[in-house]
Image (cartoon, rainbow, N blue to C red; front, side):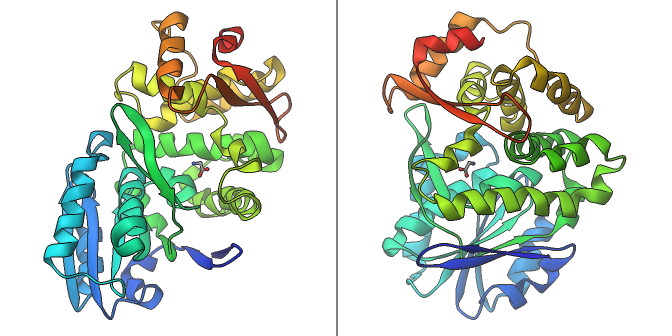
Length: 332
Ligand code: GLY
């Protein structure tokens, strides 16, 4: 299956296919210097499969985890590119999940004012969200994604066989982003998720359906001036929960919790069982509302006293609300 992201001045393909990784040279233009960047949590086989297809391949591996998405790793990759004389006609491939593609995308956006950026997305979360749509960033001074750029990849490969090496916890965290898109934008997809008996069997089509939602939104509003904010459903409180638990919960797990707060009671009646079906958390007992608000303040310090939230009254639809940060207490 293939989807094409059509933006004003560029377009790129997203390939969703089991085993497409072994034909990476068919999809990416590798007849040049290629830097493969990944982390030490990604199975070597994926990195080696790409490198084997490169005549002039280099690799840079950093320690896995959000704490590596920082200026230090960013600088080390830049130094590596300079030391190895990478030019603007060379390319970089991010192999991994959202941390890898966010960081590598930002390197690509800024090195020589822009170098070709390819992604091999190996986690469900990055296949349905992080690797698509050009949001790139690093964390800085305790603020998540506060330094970054919109920079679109030139192509994204989604080999769903890579999901076989993902832990079920990581897989389910990716499901949270799919549920997010279904809840706000496609009741039919929500129903498919409720009904599926074998998620692994159905995952290719489900990824495709979720990406259709993301594609439509990003094509209309690539720079997140308006409608793209819908993709942040569950994220305002989710990010605060992520900081509160010092990154011990996965991003998707925090989004799961965040979505519950932002849903009407009749939406919760179907959303909570669906989240539980994928072992996602729906309530944390040791979470103090006052502490949570402190983290929301911290998170939003860089963007002002108001926050935009996405609220779902009915599955398949959403509304935007701009509220003062303290008003979030009404939702907790
Ligand atoms: N992950 C949300 C977005 O791409 O806008």
